[in-house]
Amino acid sequence: MAAVDPTYPLYPTGCILASAMLLLVLLTSFVRQSWNFGVAFLCFWLFVETLIEGINAIIWSDNADIKLYVYCDIISHVQMFASVVKPMATLIIMRRLYLITSLQSVKLPSKAEKRRDLAVEWILGLVIPLIIAGPLYYVVQPHRFEVDEGLGCTNSTDGSILSILLLYSWSVILPMISITVYYPRVALIFYRQNRDINRFLHSNHSVSRTNYLRILALAHIDILFTLPIGIANIVLSVRWFSSLYGSLPFYFGWTQDHSDWEPVSIPYTVLVAAGPSGAAEYYVIQWLSPVLAFAIFGLFGLTSEARASYWSIICVIGTLFGLGPMQRREDPPLRDMEFGHAGPLSLGFETKEDAVCGTRERRGSDSDEGEIEEARRTSSDTPHAGHHSPNREAFRVKTVGASGVA
Image (cartoon, rainbow, N blue to C red; front, side, top):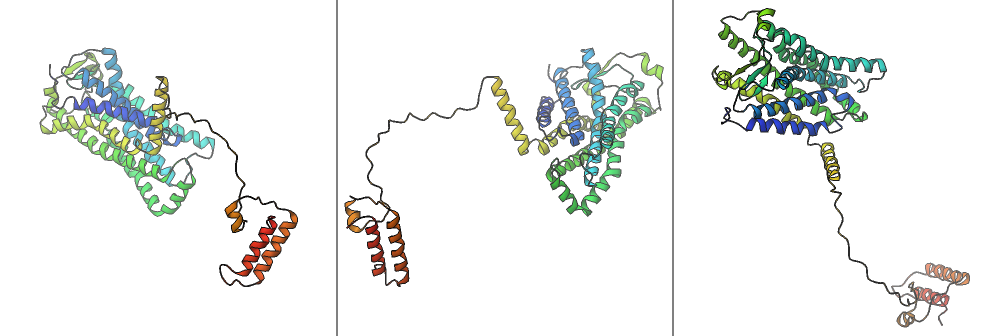
């Protein structure tokens, strides 16, 4: 049976490729640094999300069969967690950039401040998303999970105003906090104190100006993607559920949401039945995570440090398979060397006659060195008449006499 998505297998291929790129980025030491918690969190959960979406798009490419219950139970909650942690990670990144721009040390001086800062980041990046993807999601969860034809299993919400406030609003609230609270401060301080910030970044070996600007660019890209798409998603969801129910209630009630809690399947035709806007939302939302993953790899996965890490990984894998480093080509063995009688060593003190014959050696002594020095002083006291001056000939004769030549 043919896949229902006309672009298949473009989407699962893009997701798996994006997850592989993010895995490479996670293996570099830069992303795993203690002050880079937000980037590491964003990369990890994007890696998990894109890998899951790629697998789902392959399994349910041509069907909407309800199967793999335990797998779908886990995946639906992981997807909800990832939808919250992505804008939360951007908030953590902007907060860390603000601390750096404010010339506060990347490694906080006191242990108490360091523990407090780490606790804030873990609460934002883990505790709050767990609460949203757990109990808050269960409040407005009308079905165990939902299987979308062409995409696979995903989370299910009742479409009430309460579900929008509890689940969908985070993709708008968190980027707005980043833009209104931290971004103006970062931009203003960076503009006014550019020289001081450069001096601080050069003096602090844990973060460079280039890495700082890369993280700032990542925060910009994430906000530009998340905020407009989050607003569009809420607007289109309100329109969709209003047309489906006639009016949008605040909450359907606990009993109605949890009375019939079996999983449901939705055909591909229903997913894109809302017209061009619905089809656009369908494709834009599903491609948001892979595109963001490609942007992250472009910023952090092509640096010299990252390439060195990739080469180290390749060497380790080659060693595991018995492929050691390349051996240098062996040179042919050297032939036997023969040593003959060496002639006398000439130091350039011979006369023309001796230079031609080459039959005597220079045997110096203390008295000979004195005569040489006396001849040198004599030659320096008399001006030279030319290249073959008498003084130079006297020096040569003295030198020859020092050598014992008649």
